[in-house]
Length: 147
Image 1 (cartoon, rainbow, N blue to C red):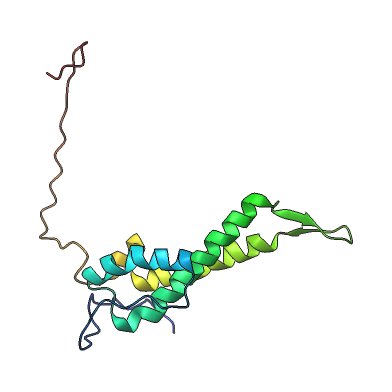
Image 2: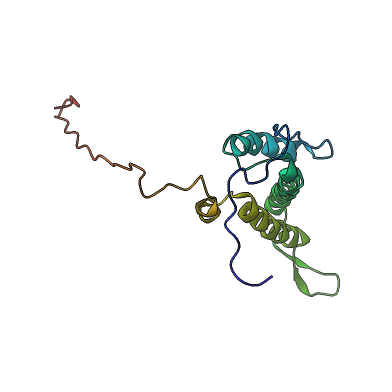
């Protein structure tokens, strides 16, 4: 589909009994930890519903694979020499790059990037929001006593 992505509304999918989706049992430990880190805050913000369980689980699985690939890249060189003498990129680098690409897509869809969050209606700050920033200067003397 061409054109801009539509601006989703927070909590736009109204489902009966909109409870926090359960973590799928097929996720490995790293993916489950990422699920636990994200699911509750997203649900509390009105972004995650049971309809989004698949997208979040796919993101978490991509996260887990990316973490594994990055760990393997620390143990092996990025470039390998084949038996025929050619130099090729490590398969772990290919996996890491592909998982980052997938994660980026899911993060945009789930509102996990700063730009994606601005598109979420109901979560972005409004023009009426009071955003006051106070700058304070603190002076200290030679004995670190505040003046």
